[in-house]
Length: 112
Length: 267
Image (cartoon, rainbow over all chains, first blue to last red; front, side):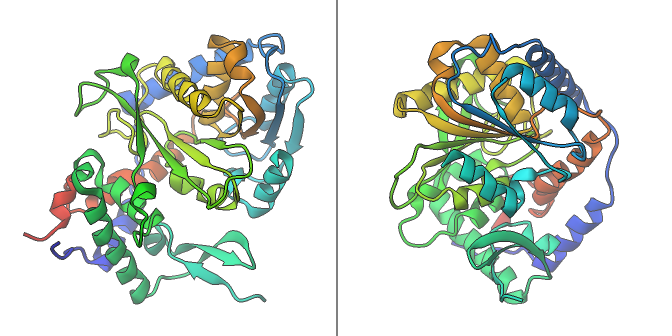
């Protein structure tokens, strides 16, 4: 095995420089993803509890108004339509709920 | 204040100063500048990891190699845990730039003793499951954890120059369906699922629209973390792209503008 020639400091500088160069252009692939996402959400929003009649488990949602990406309140309404007996956790966290230790603890309390 | 034990677990750590930290058993994130010793430690991990990967080096992007190397510190008999597993998805054949078939990757975290049902983790858009959900995998205790790599993400096939790939939403659904079939084959007793943003949408779309009793009843607990049932808008996408660029394209730059792991090695 030969030695790695990368210099860690140099790599860090490259990354930090690139971090300041955020492009707001959407490529074709990203446009495809938006279409794909809309198609999925449209189908899900038309589902009902009847669609989920074979689901005997417990459905739990963590969502909230401060989520940066998803529409938390509307997501909860859709969730209630799908799972009338589902459990709802409203959170004020902005996103990446699963990376917060306190939420992780709650998740494992629910499923263990 | 309790003393924090910091471990270098993520290849992005020493670039961002964000470290996974353990304080009396609970995991969180702290921020500080990595030491020279930690930087060197990671590079050593990476060198050893390349040895373990062997021919698979050519199947993964440089960025994925960094991530895998950091996540799975190669020591002792860890070979079987290091490598992702691959599930062929015949219906997506031809979607890959490199291969005529299509392989969906998934990573497993195996505890020393298994006492509970397996846990499936379905990550979101532009995420790398084994890293983004490392905290969950670490806290899963006595569960076998499966982390899917959605098409175009992680080690799965797909169009990789632009890291997130979905020509149509059915691509994700096909992958999800085959993945669940495999899980049901190995774990007919059922599983628990944690799904985040796009992962939640794919699962609900797959199970609700396209599948019936067999697979819905496979799931005991379904945890949806900010599921993609409704979005605020697409303005957030630039932020995700930023993150995505960071985790994939920019890490590739670390290899001196080459996507081949071999270029990481001096001649």
